[in-house]
Every structure is written in structure tokens, then in C-alpha cells.
Amino acid sequence: MLIDIHTHIWGPPGSPPCSSETIESSKKDLIKAGEKYKIDRIYVSGLYSHYPDEEEIAGLNWEVAKFIKEEPKLIGGFCYVNPAHSNAMDVLKKGIEEQNMEGMKLWVATFCDDERVFPLVEQCILYNIPILIHAFHKAVGQLEHESLAPNVANLARRYPEAKLIIAHLGGNAYYGIKPIRNCPNVWVDFSGSLFRRDDIDYTKKLIGADRIVFGTDMPGASFYNNLGQVEDGDLTEEEKEKIYYKNALRLLDRRERIL
Image: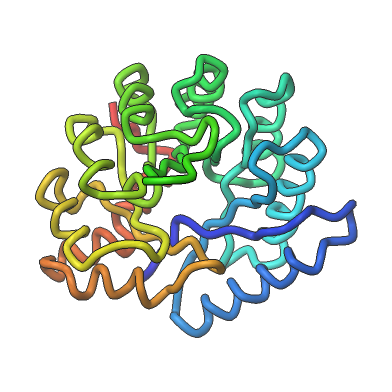
């Protein structure tokens, strides 16, 4: 079994019921990848501009909800929320309660430990759903309000009962893993195409295989690059199974609480 916890449909959302060509292209790419690579479940969030307005957020979530209805066996969704918006809580509730999404997605609109995020996290705790957090340490070009691993650690310590996923190994495993090492409620994904052969080994050494989940960042990233990270890693077959799907199943199981 294989679960990809981190993919996207990209592009400007169209006005329902007319999707943009870029979003439709993303959908086709993900369906094709699911068939080609035998991925059992693909979790999607919609993204476009770094600091979206309310209309863009609504359109992207509508597109994801539509995709779930089109491909219910393959596609699951993470509700994209901009915590700076006054309607952010309503967006989250609609995504989970009406649009059948299974988690919340935070990108770069605010730092993840901004106080405006706290009510959303508290609601996710009530729902018992995971929160996928973009966090990326860059040598140059760091975006305004782009979270880093210390921001994720701050949030994890404030809400130890929250299920948090730090994406992309925090952008650099040697920077991103240490801050969340002692936060048992933080899982990591290694989605993207920027990493080294020993990143998975280093991550396993610091936090163990139980807190690593498989993600690719498709369609913009390579499936085989991310698969190779696991297959070439210093991992037992049991640890590979945990990364490929067992850890994700635990995160997504709303009946199982971590505290």
C-alpha cells in the first residue's frame, strides 16, 4: 500500500463550475501518477498565490472538493486556510464538515505559530485531524511569513495534542529536524526534489521511522526521487511500510488520539 500525503492542484481557481486549465492539468497528472505508480491514496490541497484573498481560498477548496467527488477512491483533501482572513474558521469548518476533507493545510500567509492560527489548531484538535505545515529553510529568497522548523516546534509545544506534519523536512533535514526532535506530535514528510541521499537516514536517527510520512509534492516534483529516498535509505522492510502508509493511516484516523 502507498499513501502520498502531500500533493497539490496548482493554478488560479476558476469560477464554479469552470475550472482553470492549469488546475485541470494538475488533476490529470495526479490521476496518471496514481495509476502509473500504484498509489492507493493521494492527498491534495489547492495552491496559487502566496498571500491569497478569500475568493481565491474558496475557489481552491472548491476545486479540491470537486476532485474528491470525481475520484473518491484515489483523492483525499486538505482544507487550505489563510489564518489572516476573518472567515478562516468558517472555511475550515466547511472544508471538514461539508467538503469531506481530512486535514488542514497552512502555507505562507502567516507563520504557523501566529496567534491567529491558534483557534484553527484548537478546532483541528476537536476534529482530530492532521495539519500539514509548509516549512522551508532557504539560504536566499525566504518568503515573508514562511514558517521554519522552530515555528512548528513552538506550535507543537503549545498544543501537544495536535497532529502536525512539517513538510519538506523543513527544507533542510540538518536544520529542520533538530527543533522538532522532542515534539512527539510532529511528523515529517520529505516531499520535493531538493534532498540528499542521507536525509532519511539522518531523520530516522533523530526521530525514528514512526514519525516519517511519504509525500512527493507532485505534480511539480518527481515521484521517483521521493520513492528513491525510502528505497535507498537505511530502513528495514517494516520501517518502509510505516513510511509508505502505516504512519499516515494513524495520522488520518480520527478515532485515535495521540494524547
